[in-house]
Image (tube, rainbow, N blue to C red; front, side, top):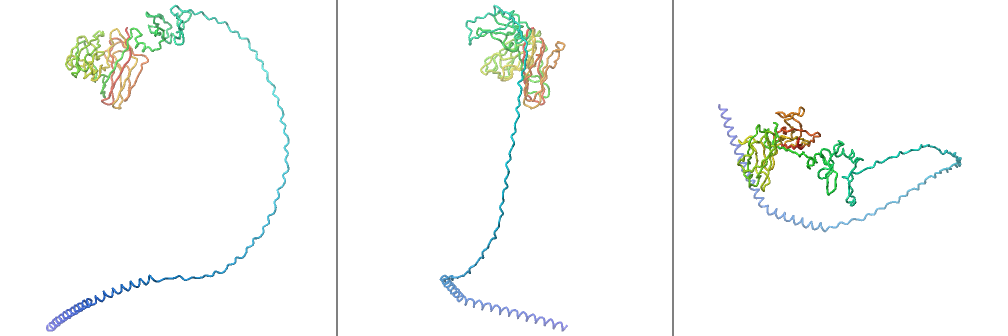
Length: 457
């Protein structure tokens, strides 16, 4: 225990000694640093003055360096002479070339033998040709074909008619203008006009001169030159044909004609369609009674107030048109001819138009209808549309039916088709006919036009 205490005491003494020594060293160091600071403070003016003098010495030295001149010494170089020895080329002897002498070539003369061609001699014996004597028959002009030629000149040529010796037209002319029958009886009409077979006019007076007529049968009908023949047409329109078949008329859907003769009424959807309005003031209807006798009536409109017809025997409405218009010149609204109970409708003049575009027709009594052209068109949906003409007539048996039979079918897509009928289709009195259409998409615009003539039986 004593030893341990002794060691501990010794350690304490050693620690105190070391601490004392460390403190003394620190004091000495602090003292030295203080002395060095004082010394540096004393030396600062001397250092600054020394630096100033050094800068002045460097400036003076720079001026001296500028005044130093460096002269380049002259260097003489002696180059010794170089002797190049002469080069001698050896002599080359080229031997002489002698051209051999070409001997003269003599071409012997070539003699062409003379060829003599004998002249051919041909003898042709032509027998004598005897032309028989042709006797030209004497042509006598009928008295009615005499023409005064006193004033014939270039501007007023002589009309010539070719006939045979009996005064009849040559067959070629008869076939060209008379139908090829070879019979043109009754050449001169009551007014001095020339006519062909069945009253077809083949000559026509113009400016006091007979002129040849070159027209089709249809053109002659249109001009009224064929008696008992009247030009005929029918149009139809439907603004929204769809996937269900409809008839071609402005109301749409299927057209249903009356089943018995009746009285009807006419009314507009616009008040301006009246007797003093700017729209349609009067309308005219062409109708048939139940004997298919054709009759007409003019009706004065009263705007949106229905006006009944005078006729009580209306069985078919064949035509329905504006008869008198105000300053607007067209229908201000939809004008309908309909049943007295407001429905069904039998015809419509659509807004902005002056005739009903209903493609439904019944052949009148004592008439035959011939259709020679069908024109149909569709558009608006780029889908195919099928048009069908129908009639209550069986042309095989020649009898009227109580249902419709198809006659022509046409399929078009956003286009028009004009179909002439080389053999016109004939329908007899009392036959109903119409045109229907069905399209690949609803909203297809469809129209149709029929052309032909009515002929009195």
